[in-house]
Image 1 (tube, rainbow, N blue to C red):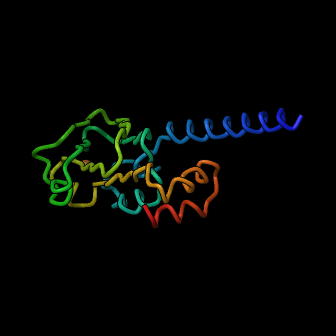
Image 2: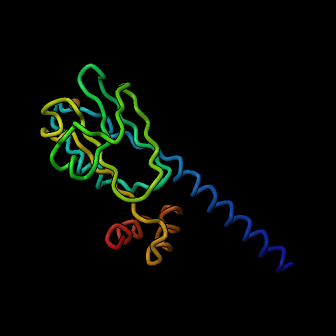
Length: 156
Ligand SMILES: [Cu+2]
């Protein structure tokens, strides 16, 4: 009987973990939230990005008026200098979903002259999921504890 109970609990735990991973992997983050991807009102995309905990498999959604903006994935140097001349990738539909497949920084700017300089740029940073120190916190985060999130952001 004890063994049956243990097996049942293991199954429940496995299910919770799988559900947590699934939710995390499929998460969609709309850049700028309600404001979207714009220069109107000078949204602070740095603060926006810092308020999220991105993970591999997450989707970043850029919504904007394609007559006025676009999305360029660029190198770190081009992100810093707002150089739109040599993008890694270009998106221009006005409704671009970009799934982040690797850890590290992913830099995006608007390629319309003056917009990146005006703040229309965002750095999507994804911590290394294999960080040993943080693994227990990742797990806890999936189970919706808030404090470990804070610890994780400090250490990874
Ligand atoms: Cu723009």
